[in-house]
Image (cartoon, rainbow, N blue to C red):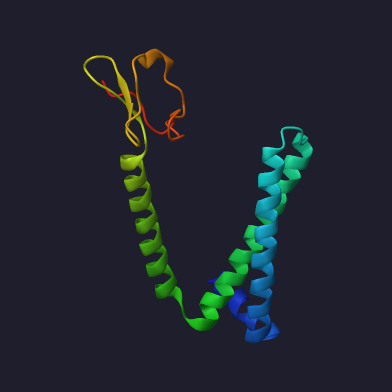
Length: 148
């Protein structure tokens, strides 16, 4: 495959140790680009052109880090290890999300129309006026809903 030959050639030309350093530099640049895009998104006054530039910068840094990580995988012979670890980490994160959804605070409505915070037990009697946060413990209820 042409790509694998190119990766091998590049590593051979610059050397493994130099490419390790380059990988670290590219990782730092990716982090900076991700933070910049997030800041630009959070600032409602960011012009569309600037947001587009930040997105493109992120794409460039992702491309750089993918090339560098492919070189590290090639140099160290990590193809199977990396794939196995990625599969394990994705599975673990999906399980964390599943558990978080099951334990997310929510307003629980009983048969008498009272709503109770599933986190602290705070009750009030008007399900129509429930707020996104429990006034007693501050739990964020936006992940849950009234049970019927």
